[in-house]
Image (cartoon, rainbow, N blue to C red; front, side, top):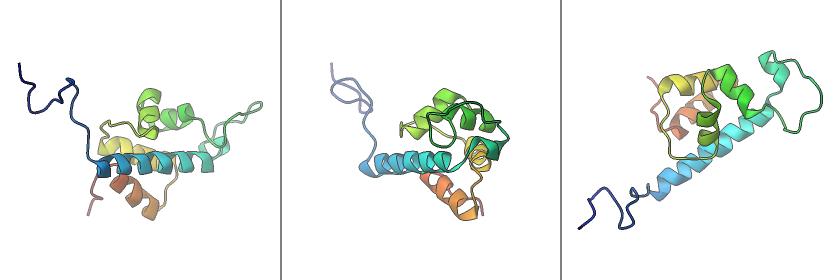
Length: 115
C-alpha cells in the first residue's frame, strides 16, 4: 500500500521547511532571553530562597500569561506547535516587551502584526 501524500515513507508527517525550523529556533532563543532578563519581582512574585535559574522560571511565565506550562515549554523548545494571537499577546505582556520586541515576537510566532 502506498503512503498518502501527506505522510513520509516511515508513516510520519512531512517535516517543515528549513526556514520554518529556523524561525521556531529563533523564537525559542528570543523567549529564553526575555525570560532570563526578568526577575520574579518584575511580575510581583516574592523572591523566596535560592533560585537555580537566571530570571523567571517557565512556570512563572506560563502562569502569568495564563497558558499551560507544557505549551510554553514546547514553544520555548522550538517545537512545531500552534500559537494563537491571544496567547502571543499574553506572553508579550508578561515578558514586558516594547513595541519593537512585540512585533518581533509576532513575526517569530508566524503572525503578521496587526495594522
